[in-house]
Image 1 (cartoon, rainbow, N blue to C red):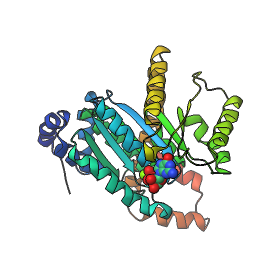
Image 2 (cartoon, rainbow, N blue to C red):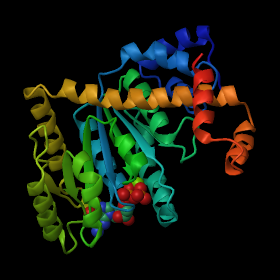
Image 3 (cartoon, rainbow, N blue to C red):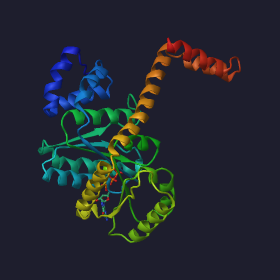
Image 4 (cartoon, helix red, strand yellow):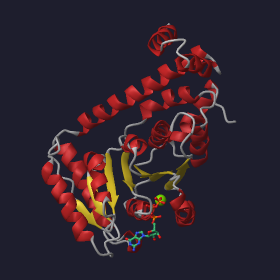
Length: 320
Ligand SMILES: Nc1nc2c(ncn2[C@@H]2O[C@H](COP(=O)(O)OP(=O)(O)OP(=O)(O)O)[C@@H](O)[C@H]2O)c(=O)[nH]1
Ligand SMILES: [Mg+2]
């Protein structure tokens, strides 16, 4: 397993910041595997982050996220921006074929060092998917990528946690989802800064648009922004520049209204809570030791112990 000693870390920073792809790959694997030195690496790199524009794209399996990401990446490359893509692998068996499709499609970019693509390990990765995605995004940022596109299949809580680290969130819907529009009420309405109705070559795009508008009229966002709705046919490259324009508009809005900082503070508040939760839990686990959790759980299940006192005791011990 890759590790990074203190001396390594110092030696890695230069090439990483210069955008060296092999260094980037090595550093990402140290972080993903939580190998020795991972947190020191992140500490050392944090000062060099905060420059990249992070765009999250989420939507149902097969909605056309990868196709759109691919076109957007091209669009930004034409403007001479460097691009990092984080594809958070869908685990749904329905999308098995599409993953292969991703690989083939994205291979086109491998010749261009201006695009770096990383597929994230699926759920169950060490440190949790949302956290690892956040860390990889930090690394891409430190390596000087101008634009970072995060593709994630959604929307569950994991995805919401992931898109939260984006500066801008694009939600991709497709016609013919039927009742799914109801489910967008739950999580998506709050996180979407821009809606894309992809596969607008199919019937029903207008209807989806009307439904989004209807939902939008019910709740005003506290930042006063009304997420625009862009129709696209990603497979033909139609609507891509409109999506990019909508992204630029929202950025300008955030800038004009001085909201970018506020949004970033909010995101960090969430992330700090998550990081704290992880750190505390790790301490508690270490305190408990392997196997003891099962033993204690059995005692609680048999009513030999009450869980409330138990948790208080473990928390108190882990605290010291
Ligand atoms: N008709 C039509 N097909 C499209 C459009 N955009 C993408 N597709 C097709 O839809 C399929 C899925 O596209 P992907 O880009 O892989 O979708 P995805 O959302 O990334 O899929 P997962 O990552 O598996 O969730 C592919 O066969 C695309 O060619 C579109 O606008 N219209
Ligand atoms: Mg995809």
